[in-house]
Amino acid sequence: MLAKRIIPCLDVKDGRVVKGVNFVNLRDAGDPVELAALYDLEGADELVFLDISASAEGRATMVEVVRKTAGEISIPFTVGGGISQVDDMKRILRAGADKIGINTAAVLNPQLISDGARRFGSQCIVVAVDAKYNEAWGEWEVYTHGGRKPTGIKALSWVKEAEERGAGEILLTSMDADGTKDGFDIPLTRAVTDALTIPVIASGGAGKKEHFYDVFAEAGADAALAATIFHYKEIALQDLKQDLKTKGVEIR
Image (cartoon, rainbow, N blue to C red; front, side):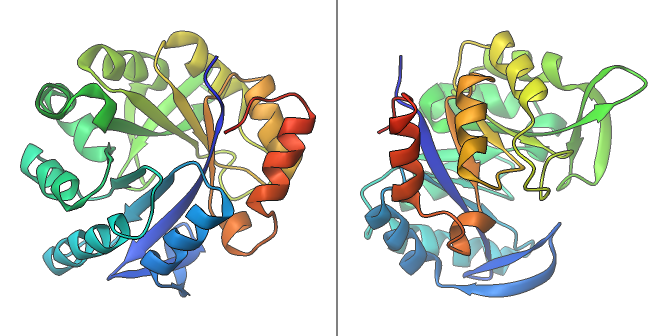
């Protein structure tokens, strides 16, 4: 069994890390390169950078941030946000990212997954999925555009298609759990891990150390991602890892 991974997530806007709720009330949280280096030092297994700048200037800034970060850290990092074609992937990978995260662009053009996997290898392609429970269906629905647009697509069929097209990993965010700090969405994560053979990163809802144990032990997640609790030092990475090891979770 592969060791479980703990992944801090940094939202980057115009070259700075920001914190907010649902992309509003954003506050500056520091320099992404410095924060990345700190997380590397503290024992993070990987990092995810999400570029939330919409402009072309934001893209150029992000490439520079990726280049600087790659020179400062030794752990893998994934970059997502605004990547809509293979040339975007190439630019970010060439700057030093290890993996590319695609979400809305993959839903709008599933061929992008296939093209990216064929060009760079499945291990580089992370398909991010924002899912919310649909009461009428009794199942989860995929949302795009930062969780603003329902797609009418069932999450389980979409993650299976992503895997078939060559995705190497799924970054699964529960919109129902996100920001609640009440724990990861166990039913959703379990349903997705059961449906796939590729690794699943659980995201949304982390509030305390036990939540990480639950999502590994009960839902079979391969990795767990969080932002606020790490940025605000509510949970120290080393403490979390020690706690998981004590409970018998194989951790890096």
